[in-house]
Amino acid sequence: MVLCIVSPRVSLWRFIALVFLLGTLLVACTHPRDPGTVVVGLEGNPTTLDPRFAVDAYSTRILPLIFESLVNIGPDGDVRPGLAASWEIDEAGTTYRFALREAAKFSDGAPLTVDDVVANLDYLRDPANKSPAAGALEPITDVRNDGGVLIIELSHPYAPFLVKLARGIVPAAKLDDPAFGDAPVGSGPYRVARFARGSAIELVPNPHYAGPAPTIARVRFEVISDETTRMLKMKNGDLDLLQNCTPPYALKHFARLPGIAVDRAPGINYSYLGFNLDDPFGVVNDARVRRAIAHAIDRTQIIDTLLKGQAREADGLLAPENWAHADGLPTHPYSPERARALLDESGHPDPDGDGPRPRFTLSYKTSTDRLRNRIAEVIARQLADVGIALEKRSFEWGTFFADIKSGNFQTYTLTWVGVTDPDHLFYVFHSSMMPPAGANRGRYSNARVDDLLEAARIEQDRAKRRALYADAQRQIAKDVVYVDLWWAENIVVRRTRLEGFVPYPGGEYTSLSTARLMDEPSTSRVAP
Image 1 (cartoon, helix red, strand yellow):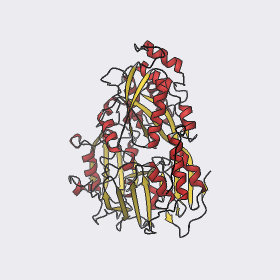
Image 2 (tube, one colour):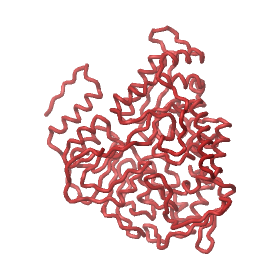
Image 3 (tube, one colour):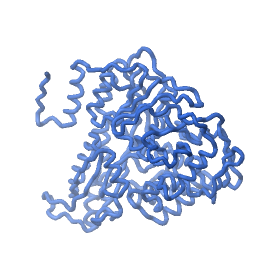
């Protein structure tokens, strides 16, 4: 038995790190497992494996292993052939002709045909089915099978259309199967062997896959929401891969362990503080209050202390690497003095000066993830410094995400992962994209932003599109729809026996289908 006596002067964060490091002194409780299996640790629970309805990151990252799409999005964000071997677009930009790859089959052995694709697109754009993809496919006026060629007609030119087609295809015969999400059938490199909702997902190679067969015999995703448990499982050899779910304090420790590699790269995953602009309490629907909150948050302190410098301060949803990122966006540098002045101006004076009474109390929702809760605690202290009380409420991922989609919140924090297509701004900020149609979860409505984003969708000239997106980003920043926090680095912790795993912009696990397992682990290292 190891007895730990923690001084009150030791912070909870340091105690967590101490517990983790003490694990190295204990006898590892590694459980024997199939050496041909790759086990991936997940911090949250995939809500569905149905590509027609999946929107959360934990689900969408796994789907490319199970389903194929008409087109694929590569690690660089470019559109690449998928089920469609090639395509042509007419001069008007409204007629698309796709030649499908031959011999594609679903994992149950049924052939995948043009008719399946037609049925999927018809299903997705039918408002009665309430798919979150419906809004993105609204320009479609006709989909048909023309002698084995897929024809899609649009009502107007739609610059990001190909990107919108990167969605898994479901067998036409199963589109109305209410149990499809529990036993999905796709044409990807793997098929689902077991789906224990909230616990684990096991994939095995799809024997009918038309592409190169995966070399990894089994992939198991385990939902491990407790951070300390997840770290100990990685250390003890029970996990092979953690992607963007390792706390900063643990990285140096993992880098020193034999047989473990830590891979790092600049990331585009964007963290933000969101608001309900239909706030029933009439607080955060005031732009001055939102601006005050932005000035009250010291992002540099959070990045340096909690994230150990593994992030860049953000000025908008699109990262600097994106071709449509706008320079010189309005920002809200840390300034408690400015925050207090804005709160006074908005009609929320401090009732007792330096006393304990707050100007008002905000409800703040987050998941049960420990780092997110620690960030919430620091934000609460920073807001308290300007007279705002924050009531933190933590929920299991599924419950938390359901509340955000339904508008049951006042403020919250989340992260957009791997955004490469600037049309994502339409999905998030256009007034027609309020759930369930899209992800305008804050219920933001600005006619000028709507017009700019609509124009950018039909403009074919990239320079002109960039200018339209820049204007939209400036207005969104001015309205403080989000408080921009940071773009986090991509951090992959893996056992060195797993080679060839390439992180994708959205965190998809696509490259597990081409990765390989080596017989002997090599020395641990930290990638530059």
